[in-house]
Amino acid sequence: MTRLLSAASALALVAAPAAAQQALSTPGHEHRAPAAQTPPAAPAPPASEHDMSEMDHGDMPGMDMDHVAPEMTGALGAYPMTREASGTAWRPDASVHAGVHVMRGGWMLMGHALLNGVYDRQGGRRGDEMAFVSGMVMGMARRELAGGDTLQLRAMLSPDPLMGKRGYPLLLASGETADGVRPLVDRQHPHDLFMELSASYSHRLGGRDSLFLYAGLPGEPAFGPPAFMHRMSILDSPEAPISHHWLDSTHITFGVVTAGYVHDDWKVEASRFKGREPDQHRFDIETPRLDSTAVRLSWNPTANWSLQASWADVKSPEQLEPDVDQRRWSASAVYTAPLGVDGWWSMTAAWGRRSAGHAALDAWILEAAAKPVAAWTLFGRGERTQNDELAGAGGHHGPAYTVSKLSAGAIRDWPVARHLTVGLGGLYAWNLVPDALEGAYGGDRSGAMAFVRLKVE
Image (cartoon, rainbow, N blue to C red; front, side, top):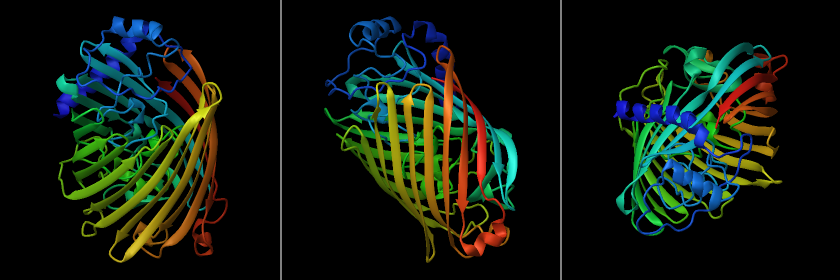
């Protein structure tokens, strides 16, 4: 299965740039795909590359082939493809769909890449500085089958392991382990090389109803909002949220199977997955074990809104505390809308709770981004978490403290070739701690990042 998924991803990533000569898009511009039409009972035969090009010029003037044609529905149901985010999570239909799309026979292929070179400086007694590379490379292959069924293969890889096991400095962050012995505190762990190797199959029941099955090694279970690097409200920031282990740390799970039902703008789904967080060996694929459960209800009431509520029973998530299980809850609302002629803005508000035994710790997040013109994107985020790992000896559990973080930044992009942009950006963060932690953190607790970004889409 892993070889098949990896091969499909490689095919998407290689074929997409090669077909750029036939893609009739304008570099540097992004367009929102219009809402999907109600599909027929049986889909029309897949268009060839030539057919898609003619359709782009004639039937839909001004629309990029790089962004999805209006009759292209999602892989899991009869909704716009722009709704799909990480794993099986939803975002607003009005979202911008990034990536280079081409047709190869009966397959639609997509390639997308975002790579950041970052210089990071965190102040105060617990601060540090470091240069690192982060980001993701994604490939997708999708085929429409008889009766409206859809098969999709997807792979996503990250350069994060190159930064080393200890990840990068990030004040007030905690979770996972650096070396299998010590927990990470005031640092963000690197993501694994293989962030997703997944397959999904959906079966059309009627005009607006479908059943689907999703499996990944690794993959993402049905919990939380879309992972932070897939949320338009903050994906331009290279900084991970300190609420990561409340809301979306399960986005890389080594073993997950999800079954779901889609009815119009509603989706209910349940997952069995491996509860243990990825270990410190970031280049391997770990042994799957389906020991944990997650359930999520999603609703997109309009093209601009996406709402979800979810629950998970996570078995032994932390390697250093194998006897401790967690219960997690989350709820989120995402809003995305046009801004000006070709711009957009997006906002996410989310709450998460994790409990082990009798202790329950909450996290809140509010983030937003705006792209008023093609060249500039502005972004910001506010977070508040209850964390019991910041003062414990060696990062182990101690008293719970409420801490907050505010960050704001911007990036300026320049198109340098077809489907390729380079950007320069920066951000500044304020870290707020209670009086009891003042002595531990001390000094100037601000953080800052400067980064250069390479984006293929």
